[in-house]
Image (cartoon, rainbow, N blue to C red; front, side):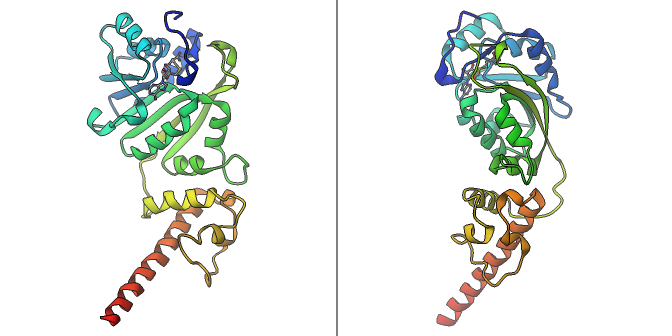
Length: 270
Ligand code: SAH
């Protein structure tokens, strides 16, 4: 392990406790898919246990070439992608659904989740270690101060469980924060139709001004004056996933109506 020098800018904190590594590796359920990707194997403490599970198609992606060299020497048959997970084209890398696991580089954990959301129809499961503070945010609900964009977007598609906490002392070097392991499992059913692109937009635009009532923060997108819907008078942190979906459908209806009337008035002009 001392072979690879920990680099702060890559968020490297190597786990030193093998029991915890084993425990994390077993948290990936891998029920309905045979592709598994580990993000940031580092010196391979999780990787060794993941290899033991004998997944049909197991790959790791690591950005640090020093770690890659170490892994190549240590695990000869390991399928290593040398590169940045945030740049990875998952469609050409995996032809079917996959599970992702990793002890995340904490400095990019939010970006990793946005990337997973982008590929939400491909990523069936995600088990990861991350800052406890972020884990708490992801599982929080309406009314909580830490409830935010990623909580809503991820919970709309995934069931999220906080599995256990991990103290800073079992890493080298120890991070400044406590850690936690969470598991996200993709929900199959899409009960109602809604414009998903617009849903992302509505969640982001409202939470970017979390103190404002929805009606006001939506103004750049749509004019809701004259509408008397309770949701419009609330703040984003008061809305559950279903409320956000209802809000999206409301916005969609208004946008469609505006488009139609625009078309009609053009028709009259001509
Ligand atoms: N899994 C190891 C290392 C965790 S530290 C352990 O538990 O000990 C996080 C790892 O992610 C480091 O190895 C770091 O080099 C790697 N990493 C950082 N940014 C990355 C990125 N954008 N893509 C892939 N790997 C990355």
